[in-house]
Image (tube, rainbow, N blue to C red; front, side, top):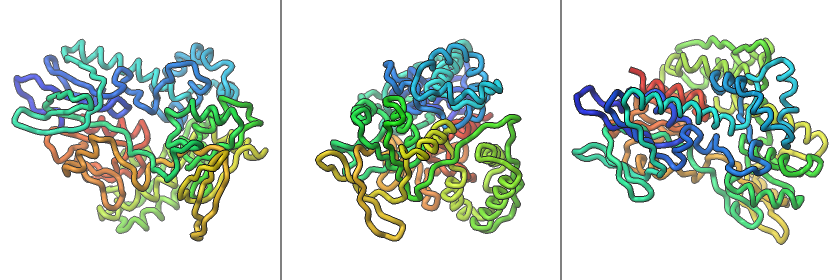
Length: 475
C-alpha cells in the first residue's frame, strides 16, 4: 500500500511531515531510479527533527536544557553509538551550563556508560540531521529525485490524475501515493490559560515565561508529564535552584517513574497467557507479570523497554480473542508504564525535599488572573473545588477534552478516510497504515489501531513509530 504497482511509469510519492515518523517513511520507502519523492513539512530542512527534537537557533540559557525521556540506547542504538563517537565535542558544548547535565551524568560516565545518558533532545535532532542527510543522498545516488518543500499540507483530494495535496500557501502538489506523518493532538485548553500570568504551552513561549521565572514567580504546571519536566529544566537554566518555586498539578498528584539505566543492560521478559476473553483478565495477567518483575528487582526502565520489545513481536491479538476488548487495554496500560527523564525526576525529588518543588492532586477547571499573578481552580476527587494562588501558570496538560489534530488529519477525519476508535479514543487506520482513500497512509503518535492490531503502548515513542512505519513499507 502507498508504493504503487510495478509499471514503466515513474512513481511520484509524497511524504507529509518533518518529524521522526516522516523520516522513517522516507528511510524505508521502496523507490527506484526515475521515481520522485516529495517531502512537505514546515521544518522539512531539518527532516527528522520535527518539533520534538528542534534546536534553538540562538544561544539562550535553555538551548540544551530539554532532555530525552529515555536512555540513549532505548531511543535508538544507532543514536547511542553516535553519542559515544561524538562525545568529546558534545561534552564541550555542555560545559558550564545550568542545570549541570554533565554533573548528573558523572555516575554513568565513570562506568563508561554514555549509552545510558538522557541526552538533550537537540542532540537527537543533530543525529537525525546526519542520518537523513545520508538517506537522501543515497536515494539521489540511486536515481530517485528528492524534493523538499517547506510548507504545511491542509487538504487532500483524489481525481482521475491521482492525488492532489493543497498547502497552507495555496500550492498544489500531485502524487501517486502519499504517506501522512503528523504529530499528536493539540494540548487540552483551559479557560484563562493564555492570560497575563499564564501560557497555553511551554514551547515557543520560553522568553515570556523566563521573565516571570527571573522575577521570582512561583511556576505552576498543569500536568505532571514530560513537558512539566521541561518546564522545571527551564527554571533551572535561568535561576539558582534555591530560588525555584515550582508546582506540578495532576489528577493523582504523582510523578512519572525515572527510567534509570543499569549495567549490565537487562530487559524484563514477560510471558503472558493467550486466550484472554476480556481486557480485565489480560490486564490482570500483565499486573502479575509486573509484580513478578519488581520482585526480581526490575525497575521501570527494564519493564518499560522489555514490555515494549515483547509487544512489538506479540501484538494484543496474540492474547485477546475479542477485538473490542483489546481496544480497552491501551487506556489503562499507558499509565502502568509511565516513565520519564532520570535527571529531571531526580532533581524534582531532591528539590521537593527542601521545599522548592511540590506536587498537587486535582483536576484543573480554569485559571483566573489576579492583580499580581494567577489563581488556579481545581476539582478534587470528591467533587469539591479548591483555589490556588500562584505566580505564573504553564499548560502542560497534553491532549484531552477539546483537543484538535492538525488541519490535514482533521480533513481526513471529516472525509471518513480515517476514524477515531470509539473505545480506545485514538486514531484508527487499516493494515500497513492504509486509509480508506487508496494510495494514502497515515501514522501518528495518536494512532491506537493499525489493521487488526491494537497498540498496547502509546506510539509517543520514536522506536515504536519507526517500527510501524517500516512495517508499512516492508516488501
